[in-house]
Image (cartoon, rainbow, N blue to C red; front, top):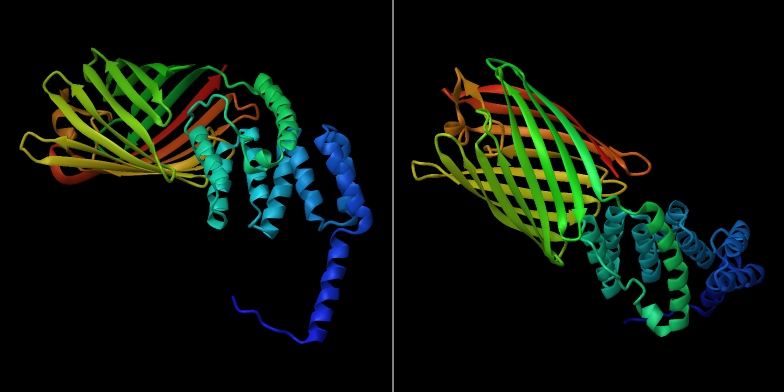
Length: 430
C-alpha cells in the first residue's frame, strides 16, 4: 500500500475538520444519553430506551449508533416497519456494516417478510462475504420455499460467542416477541379455494368454462390438496376428481404427486404425474419427474424437468416437457415463469410464457370427436399474467389471471386461432 504524504498544515486542518464533524455527530451530551439508552435496551426496557434514543436523534440526526440501536429495539418489540425505515437509512449511508445487515435481515424474518429478507441477504453479500449472512440467506430461501424449520440458531453469531451475556439478553427479548407473534399469527393449517375461468375464441369454438373447488391441509409430512374440477366445453360438461400431494423427505428435498380421475368424455380417464425437487447452492432449485395420461384411445407419457432460481424478491423458473410421438420423434414444450414477491410468498405478480402444449392442458372437441391424440403435438404459443394479494391478516387470498393463446387448428395445419382466458381465484385460510 502506498502512503501519500501531505503538508503538515493540511494535516492540521483535516484533523480539526474531522474533530468538528465527530463532535456534531455524537457530542458529549448525546453520547451520554446514548449509553443510558443502551443500558436500558439491553436490560429489557425497550420503551424507555426508544424515548431516550428519539431525543438523541432529534439533537443529532446523524448519530448512527443511536439510529442502529433504535432500529434494533423497534425490531425486538415487533415494530418491524419502523425498524425497516431506520435500517434502510443506515444501509444507504454505509453498506459495509455486517451487523446492520444481519439485524435488518432478521427484522424481516421476524416480520414474516421472507422474500424481502432473501432480497436483503442477496444484496448484503454483494458487499460482504460472510458465513452468518450466507446462513440467513439460506434460511430466508427455505422459508420462501415453505420448508418448515425447527428451532433454528438465529443467535449463534460471532457477536454472541464473543459476548454470551449480551446474546442471552437479546435472545430472551426476541424469544418473547417471537412467542407472542407465534400465538397471534400462527400459520393456519387449512385452506379452501374456489376458481372460475373462462376462455373465448376468435373463431369456430364456443366459450369454455372451468370451475374448481379445492381444500388444502398442511401436515407435518407435507400438504394434501383434494380438488373437484368442472368444465363446460363445446356443449359438453364433465367432472374430474383430482388430488395433489407435496410430501417432504428431508431438508431441501420435497416432491409433487398428482392423480386425477374422470368418466366424462371431456377429461382423460386417468392422469398422474410427479416431480422431485431439490434445493441447490446459490438459491437454485431443480426438479425432475414425469406425466402419464390414459384416454379412451391411447396413453401418453411425458418427461418433465425444471430449473428455478430466487434472486432478491424475484423467482424464475424454466420448465420443459418432453413427449414422444408415434412417429419416433420427440416433441418439447416449455414454460418460463417469472414472479416478483412483495410482502411474503402469498403476495406476488408475474407472468408465464410458453410454446408447445402439455398433456394436462384442456382438450378440445370437433363434431363430438376428441382431439386428444393430436392436440398434444399442435403448435401453440401462450402468455399469461397473474396477480395475487391478501388481506391485512393474510387469511383471505385473491388472484386474478389473464392470458392469450395462439394455437394451430388441428384439422387445418398451418392456420391458427386465438383464445383469451380470464380467471379469478379466491381462497380463505383457517
